[in-house]
Amino acid sequence: MALAVALVLLVLGTVAFHFLSPWWFTPIASNWKMMDDTVNLTFIVTGIVFVAVNLFMAYAVVRYRHRQNAGEQRSEYKPEDRKLEWWLTIITTVGVVAMLAPGLAVWAKFITVPEGTPEIEAVGQQWTWSYRLPGADGQLGTTSASLVTVLNPLGIDPNDPKGQDDVLVDNPELHLQVDQPVKVLLRSKDVLHNFTVPEFRVKMDLVPGMVTYIWLTPTRTGTFDVLCEELCGVAHFAMRGRVVVDDSSAYSAWLDTQPTFAEAAARPAGDATAGQVHFATCTACHGAQGEGNEALNAPKLAGQQDWYLARQLNNFKSGVRGSQPGETIALQMVPMAQMLDDKALRDVVAYIATLPDEPAGQTLNGDVDRGRDLFVTCAHCHGEKGQGVWSTRAPRIAGMSDWYLVRQLENFRKGNRGRHPQDFYGTQMAALSKMVHDEQTERDLVAYINTL
Image (cartoon, rainbow, N blue to C red):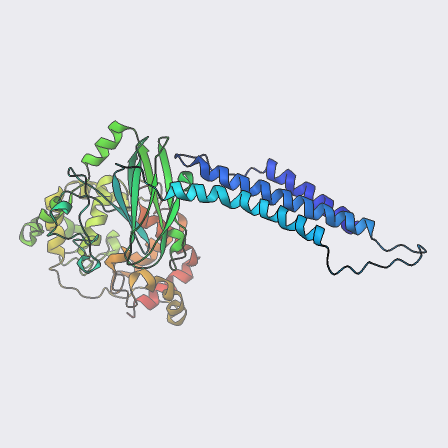
């Protein structure tokens, strides 16, 4: 009898939780309400089966329970019951058809893109997103994995005239226009990924070597997270982006700030000679050879990748770094970076690349063997030798200022860095830094990095 009561309570509790649960679909922000309708239909069909089966089990437990002094009761041996089998077959068929038939209708609409829908491209790689939009000609140029470089991260064919006006969005934030349908072409540069915006309800895998797609019409303005929902490596959980749905004026204003492929390709390289003049200001803290100065909280710059230095200087200029509570030291760099316009920034970075690269001196001690085990995770982004990997946006850490590495690990761990909404890569480090959970662990890790 207790088992029967438990089964009934299970049914009542499950049904009550379904209707009273605070966890439900996020409010929809696209035209794909039929996705919700199909899922709800599945809940109804499977819910009816769940209730019926468990209540029948409770009935059977009570009806056919063992009774003392009730005389001999024997079950009937009945190997076949054609009537029962027909009923079970019919009911099961109706349930399966009720769940699958609407899904087929939704799938047919999912793969049928309305004629004239503009195309954009979302590109996934470990562990970030970037995007490409058509220019004035309304067409995207061709791409090739063999053309991917630091200066051409999306691998656009420079000989294809259709690609010259393609708009490049080399960060994980994409803007869309409200009430305008869009077809999103999905391409991966390395492994399987999945492009998902929960509020849009549609999702699709990115498969290396092929182009998949989704389409949707955003129905309300707002900011929504882009997730990767295909296990793609150690930082899969941190592979996040953002979709901002704007009205037409805000969308146009954003689009005007994004460079085209032709503009990016025509951007001149930095002039090291001119950069030497600008670097004169930097020497007061970072040293004449960019060797760094712990007393002034200035890390070593010589030997660091130019793309990383440029990104950090731009972050200081825009307030991505140095504007959050707790970033008191980084705040010192903000006015310095704001003295550099785009050309001066490229020039000073070009000059830093000419400085002699001498490993920074070791200032910290730690357990190297323990640090080696910890570094296994770091190597996925920063490289096995800590050399830095541009494709994962991870800077060089080998030979750099060890006291600075420890301080930044602590800043990430305590939330002093990586909190700004536009600091996508800092956010990833803030999440990954949780594995380095105390000061001694930070020192052990950096002690091993000092050996690289």
